[in-house]
Amino acid sequence: LEYNNLTQLEAAFAQHGGELACAIIEPIAGNMNFVRAQVPFMHRLRELCTQHGALLVLDEVMTGFRVALGGAQSLYARAIPGFRPDISVFGKVIGGGMPLAAFGATRDIMSQLAPLGPVYQAGTLSGNPVATACGLATLREIAKPGFFDALAAKTRRLVETLSASARERGVAFSADSEGGMFGFFFAEHLPQHYGAVMASDKERFNRFFHAMLARGVYLAPALYEAGFVSAAHSDGDIAATGAAAREAFDA
Image (tube, rainbow, N blue to C red; front, top):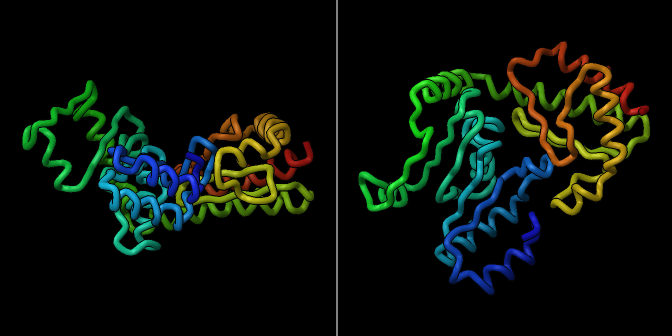
């Protein structure tokens, strides 16, 4: 289904609702750059899953513990009363740089897994003690007061700097961010689905990427990849990136 397309969503459930076991969605899609699921779309998806007995699975592999301590689902919970997924999937940040993934679900679902229930689940890296220790250390760090406020402010400053530089040069440009995750497009308006992402100016993006690389800034090399700011990035790093961008927009 096309991302954020309510008409297609309604039609799919009307036609196949009784056959659907689950609906899986990235709440902020990071593999078509940075595209948010709009609140009405997520709200209706939750309603339709509930009505048809399908599980709502949030893929928070990219967004979990990156956009907020409570993940992207915490952002939707503030906008949609009673919102919560049935299953959440995590990776990347949760491992603190080590190979680790996790999932969680409602008590009813988790009680179906062994040893409590009949469904056996295991993996090669399940519960690896070194990766788990690194992940727990990371979660303790990001749970400290003010961590996400500072990270989000730093990311917004980068996005605002890029946007201002583009405006000064009359470049069609749009950008968005949440927590430490951001994306930008050479397009007048933020895309709402993959087709709109691919309709943005790919040649301009490629020129900008290589111009930034020549100035010592390595951005994600494809227009369908999101970018990430970390606590390790300094104010000087953000300023240097902005200075490089002012030159690169002329490329």
